Image (cartoon, rainbow, N blue to C red; front, side, top):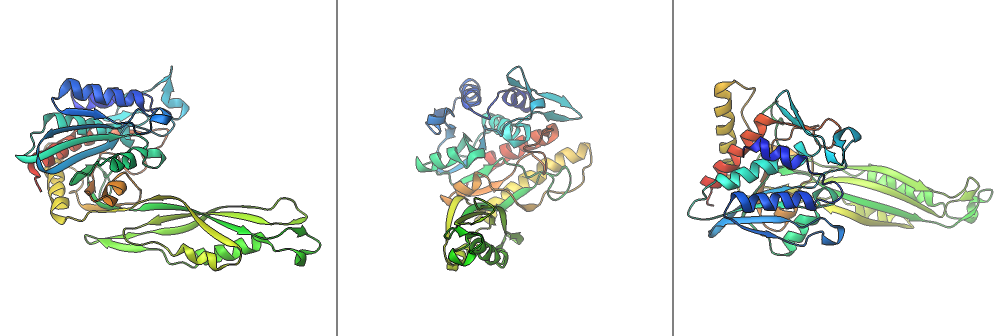
Length: 375
């Protein structure tokens, strides 16, 4: 089976509420088309997610993983037909929910895993996780169970960053820390505001603290990565004539490796407490040789394609604005890069699609790295 065929079959399987059926497809495909050791764990079992699918072949002291996820965000109505996902091809693209994020990359990784012959003394791993779209359920469970490859290529989108149609290699990405500020006061009649303590005023003071914070930033392999901090929601008060006793503020922070905004300063405001609700870790590749090896594979694949139809550029090391499962793996000690066919603006849209040429290109990249990298 070619990459496009596998991608088409996988994209057609609904996996926005329960991804067990998509996991079944991945597991059965590996058992049918490879002689690898295939396992399925219990990640997300209580929610019916079906567990992560992991396959291994080769053996040795160095392990390289090709990593993806087979869950997707809820589809647009136009992307569903008779209970399944609509999949079609046009203008050199595969169209459907999950084609870009990220079943297309999973298909490319499956075929590369099947065809690659890893070097002596190296283990090649394939992993497709559940629950990436809801905070890395599968990746966190895998890490907790001891999943710890030495190196990983995570197939999230990196195409079109340096130039249209060019598959780059991301050496870092931002994380996301979502926080809630709760301002407590005391209620009073609005005609006697001095009798109470206005929680909205306290929240406003905390918002001023957030507004004045400097954005975190760092540099990874010569690429600048800048974070951000923004207040995104505010809710408080109970009636037009009551001094509010409670107000909540939501803060979205895009984090960078090794840096966090000092949001704890908001608790210097009387009555304000700060709680972290979600903290998706950023990623920074910690091995320049590995990052360069994947970049060389990307350039070779792009050059081979451009020899037939000249393209617009040469792959580069880039940084991504979005959190991925690479953050969880890197946090646990795996050296990661991100390299995949999806382009900016394609994921999570009603017109989601992925370039068929980019799928084939990623297959070549993954196979090249799997057959050449031994640490």
